[in-house]
Length: 430
Image (cartoon, rainbow, N blue to C red; front, top):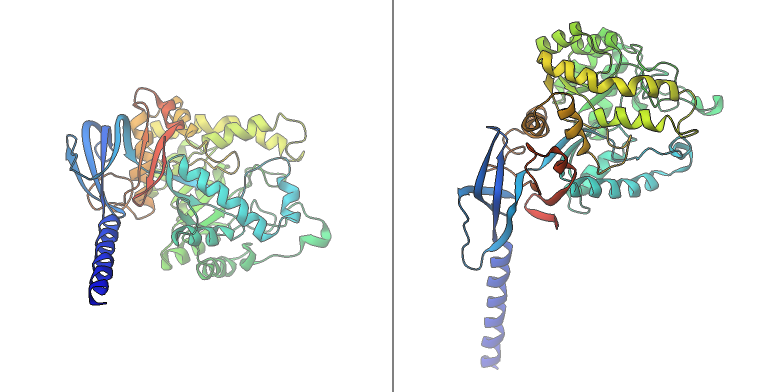
């Protein structure tokens, strides 16, 4: 009996030691080329050492310890996980989107969002900023953080803020029976006090940031795509309250006047920026605001507007007018010296093709390396995560991706991410 006990005890100890060895196993990622986003340089033959969810070292040459977990990317170009500052993980626009608002339950939206989140992650975007949904996006973030489902690290605005009839008024296009009179709880703001209450409600709901629709928009069922829709006083109240609660503010804006009010009011990012004037560009530089151009969305909505019945009739002229303008405005803003943050508006178009934005930015005049920096170190700074994401360096989260080719020579390679690690876990390796 005593001998049997010793045998069982020995086996249990061996199993425990083995489990501890596996859980604490260190991975060595062998990189043919490695992009240093901070310096903008590309280095050859590097090894990234990863333990648990952090990068513990970046070493010269190929380090291959005996019995180590080796990840061989010697024929790839390795870089930090990408950050998209403008996505909508609850949706993927199609010709049924308008009616879906009335027939899908919250659970249906949630199930759809799980697929969109996984697709986004597996295409190299390990962090995203979700700029508006029903609030399911907050639960989605929580589920990802808890490890229940795969997806990117999510910073979410919850439900966007609008004025009555504005771009993010949730009852636009509804019948008079359903249109109601939504207020701050639902994200509709018509005064300074409404603005403060709406921010506090977003904080209570669990949002990470605030999104306002400072002008009309393309896909809302409303006539104007660019008129100003908040007063400066309302925007200032929203931005001041957001700051008190540790949140920054993003502003959807196509029209120039609405952009100026948003920038002066204190927003951190302007989304789209379609009709931005040189005066507004100067204001952005003065107030340290960043443009998130979403060129892909502009091109996609312009193309879809040519398909009969894809959008409601009221949307079509806005899509045809706004879509073709965004890339040119981006190019002028970049040359002027406006800060550029990478963002796509994925959800307005198919999730997973976010990488197209890199090519469109290069076409608009931005060097390839700077587009990658916009999607890494710039976005990390705006999210106040500069010491945790956006670089491959000691102490950073192990968010690491790889592509087949050097993007400074072939930018289209960013559309085909072949390796994805987030928080030290490999989600894709083909």
